Every structure is written in structure tokens, then in C-alpha cells.
Image 1 (cartoon, rainbow, N blue to C red):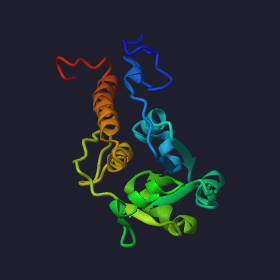
Image 2: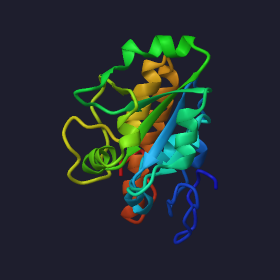
Image 3: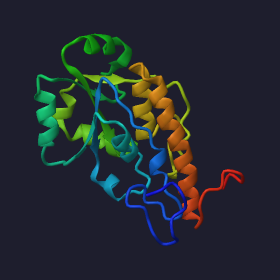
Image 4: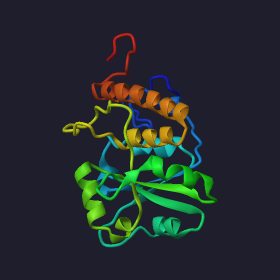
Length: 209
């Protein structure tokens, strides 16, 4: 749909907004990495899921659904493929800074595959705890250079970034600062448009609501 206001009651099938469409504002990004979102099934029901925008923007990305009883076979195949060098992006006592591994990975013949657990912090910890196949992966963490601006969920923990913000920090660490800024600029606008939409009108930049 167009970025212009849509008819009241008509929801854009892509951005899910009823009073305006923001799809045309979404940047299209290329990067020398692959980001795989391993999504908790609860995220499928959440309008506030931010990983969806990374998937629509970054050409080298994929989405996989986590199941407690069995590994994701598609993601396992990527992990075991000789084309990828897999890492689990998760801060823990076992994780190392991404700065210590990014350069060797980028210089290798393999594409760095960064797996991000897409869910609440509690869900992400459970996903890792219940998945020995994830525990076997080398774990890396980021040192965020920004404070989260995410405002779409209640009880957002202080110091935590949403999935899209994590992905943008990852892009920045890979030398894609401009791409990360473009995506964050879109996301800031989307959050304002989302709030206005829930209030029953289009976002008006002049008024800020």
C-alpha cells in the first residue's frame, strides 16, 4: 500500500496499520552476514514483534519457529552447512565479545550466521535452557552503543534492547552503520505511527501524535 492514509477500517496486510501505511519507508539492506531469528511461538501473536521489520528489510535473514520438543531442522541444516559459521547472539557467562570473532569470521570463506532468540527475555532464557543444540553453539554478545527507544510493550526491562535494535547493533558492529541508522530511523517513525493507529488516527508529525 501507499504511505498515504488508508481508508478507515482497512488494514495494510504488511504493516498492519489501518490509518496509514509505512511500508514504502522501510529501507532495503544488504550485509555480509546472515541473521536467523529463532522465534518463540508467542511472538506470532504479538503485534509488537519487531523482528518482522528486520526480516522485511534485510535480504540475508530468515525466520524459524522454536519448538521445545525438537530442533528446527531448517536452522540445524544451516548450522551444519559448510557455507556458514554459526554463532548464538546471547549474553551469558560463556559468551565472548563479538569484536573478538567478527574479523576472522568475515575473512573466512564462510558467511557468519548469527542466531537471535526472538521473544521476551524470560522466553529467550527458556529457549536456550531447553535446547541442547543451541547450547552447543559458540555464544557472543554485543556492547550496545545506544539506549533502547522501544516503547511498544509494557514492563520492558531497563537496559534491554528489542530484537530489531539488537539486529541494528549487530549491523553496526559489522561496519554497516548507515544501514543500521536507516532501519532505526524507520523504526522510530513506525512506533509513532503504531501508537497513533491504536488511538484511531494517522500519525501527525506536526503535533507528534
